Image (tube, rainbow, N blue to C red; front, side):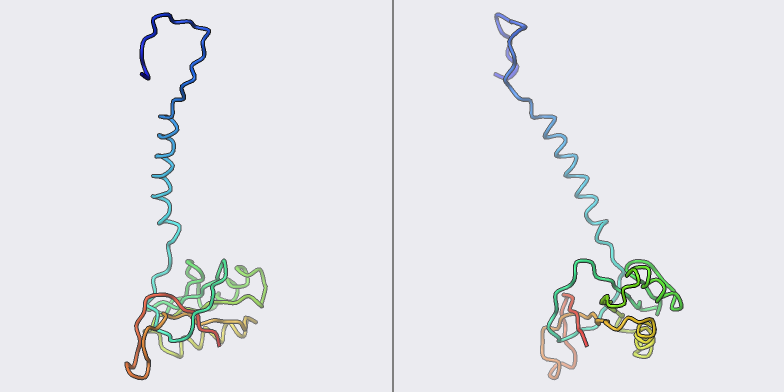
Amino acid sequence: MAGGIREHADDDDELSEINITPFIDVMLVLLIIFMVAAPLSTVDVPVDLPVSAAKPEKRPDKPLFVTIKADRTLALGERDVTRDGLVAAVDVATVMKRGTRIFLRADKTVPYGDLMEVLNRLRVGGYLQVALVGLEGTGDIESKGAVGGDSGAVVTP
């Protein structure tokens, strides 16, 4: 019995029973903290990507995303940047390493001219390794006209 009364209580005897209730309480609190904090660490810029039939490549550990949103505004990672300040913000993010691969995402409603303008700004800034990001296709492009999918794919030129 865990909480029984002894008939001869000797104060010099050590109790050999371990009370694990505080340990379980601490573990449950940590579990709740991590369950609440996990969704907050995966916040991303919402963008409706077009579909691509290219074979997806492995993403680097910390990819640098430049996003063109549907309203034609730019974001570097999750931070909004201006068109004129794009190259300066990329310089800061890459610590002036011009060989860093930049992943360019654009909403499918963005006109081709706006996409090319951002590509040209990056090229003039010295960033020549730009990968285009799209959704991975699941069907034949020629028979459907467009393909659907829901996982990310990186298309490199």
